[in-house]
Image: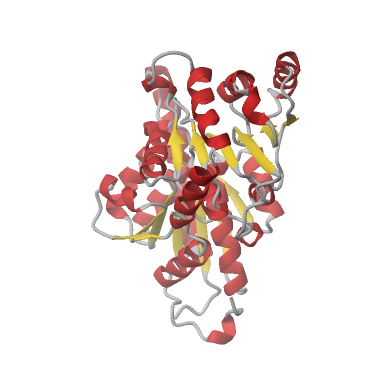
Length: 376
């Protein structure tokens, strides 16, 4: 057993989809092991720094860059990532790090590589069915991989244990085990924290084409800051009633009162949908790294929890395909109930707790005295 406070470093981020599962796990560790020290290491993006510091954790900014797109970027790629790696090695040496948790993305590479060099246990968290390039590369050196979906195993080459934990979600207690009454039905369109231009342009047009089916439904469309005005004007032009908002602060609370969602299929989004049991029309982002959103959508569609509308693989207009899927589901209560049940079967309500326990076990504190824990 270590004679110092257990120190866990979460590394990666860059996108909130990578960062939030790490924050959910870190918060669970802090709750169960209040003496533990937790540091987040990333590329220094202002939004990332803000979320980490608001959660009360330390933050270490390390130089890092994604793979270069041409020879002119190669020199700065090597220089910055080398600087990040050396800074991470120095931090590990000087701060008694017990385990490093990779959250994915290129920002996780410097600290993860330093952990490997210093022979510090490395845990990888993978939020998608198709792992990213950094996770695939690091997997061969990992001590443990915590995967969001069973399908993830088949896409990894590693010798370590792969534990299917689900994707940790913050504020999991806010997810309601029930859906709002069918007499007060809500359709929600969510494009992620930054919105989705394709959904902003095509969903209003799709709803106009099936406006007869909207009786008894309330529509809420989250657009992202940049798309708010344009989308509101489009709904007004089409005479489709909808509440348009740039951002949703309380996604769990919103989904607890939602009967059908149209959204992207990032790992965080599908995990939130499954916890709330919300049937969905998933529209994968076509430029997602390694096409992981299409992989996620396939998993959920195959389970009967969602309908996948992949614009790249369908002939004709996206709004026509969205209109066809919406028309069926808005008017078919039984189909939505079956999809809701299938969504819940894919959920992992204890994901944050399971990953937290796995990380602490790898860090060598699985036999900590119970008086160091707070009852779950």
